[in-house]
Length: 350
Ligand SMILES: [Zn+2]
Image (tube, rainbow, N blue to C red; front, side):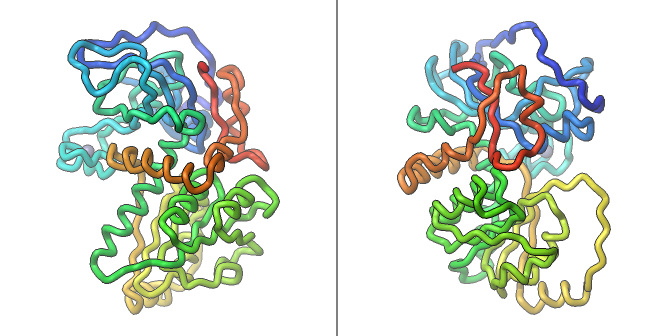
């Protein structure tokens, strides 16, 4: 794909990667497709590696180690691995392993910004960025990367809420896409009462899955969140991609509640709202609103444990988030949002 050139995505032969003594050679098995990929293919996002016009796509991955350098001891041929996405710059957060909290913005991201992604037959990587996956998770471990988005948000919410005595019981997840549903599973697995809100018909795959995990499904009616989701909610995750909901959500947030905003909204939408009321709600209720993006290795490790937990609680359910598997040649077909689809995955090898 030539970032910035809409529709320039193609399947191409490239030189095979060479892995050094400190690196691991990984055979790609599956790559998930998400909204960020659609934005890159539409020419709105992404940057190629320096000195080259094209970028290899793919940042949600699952692969199998085929070869390890002589200095590598943390994984071995045959291990299943998922790679983290972001690579640090030299800022203080990146230097301390928190590249998802990068201060300088000069980070690189595999498949997104200045580094090739994983939608290829194989890739080379240092073991620090590879997370070993138990074989039992093979059929849905490609969901780990999107799960890390909510792993981080929930971890950060609890961290922020150490400012008080906080035992949340009611949660609201805005959006029944892959990130929203994974958030719903995560919060259900922690014992919270969870409502999922979306425009989709309740009979669709996403809402059905939410209900099977014990969540309540609330279908949007009109444009007023509070009419359908009365609240109050102790914890809210916003993952719809529709920014007006980020502000409406404050109205249904409980006193002392936390609202995590996860949607990357590239547009320039305008909205008229009562800032006095919004301010008052935040101040009088000690409410917290925070943004959260990307995930470092910590959240991938938490995610592996939670994928195992999901399987214990609802055997086979997480695997059903993957509603379609495509060949590399059919990649572009997976980019458009389709009714009834949750997560579409490219099978590179089996
Ligand atoms: Zn940084």
